[in-house]
Image (cartoon, rainbow, N blue to C red; front, side, top):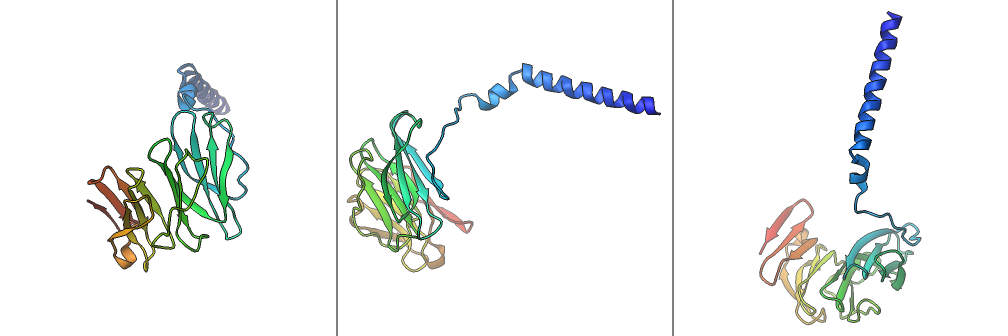
Length: 207
């Protein structure tokens, strides 16, 4: 009986080693990591990366979200494909999404720590950022940018929220949809006519 148990153990061990050898020789590990290179981010403290967008293979951005009022939100930029990052903007803000429509014009939205809707714009490739105008709500969850001047914003706030559109670079806004507790928190426009929005797990809608 003892010999049988030892034989069974040796047999199982041999099968396991053979399986590992087959996986290694077939390049399983190489295929799992193929095409990806680990990169090091700056020290972000307790903050998370909440959005990322690239203009090309070298120039890109990421933003951070805050966890408390005392946190600083950052916009980082890279010009060498993510090998190095540097700060192009920081403030006591909470950033949710960053989106460029071309190599010069981009937008960042946010809320929470802002006390007023947080929208930033750049017209020089992300080197400088400014507030293009007042936002219609305290919390800008998501944006979809279809041209340098046309921006859609989803704001889930039940009093001031809804779906908004600006055609003058976020200086003024038109309310396209309002539904109290069913205001959207996500918006994606394929073009000026076709788009989709959603509200948590409550619904998705199409125009």
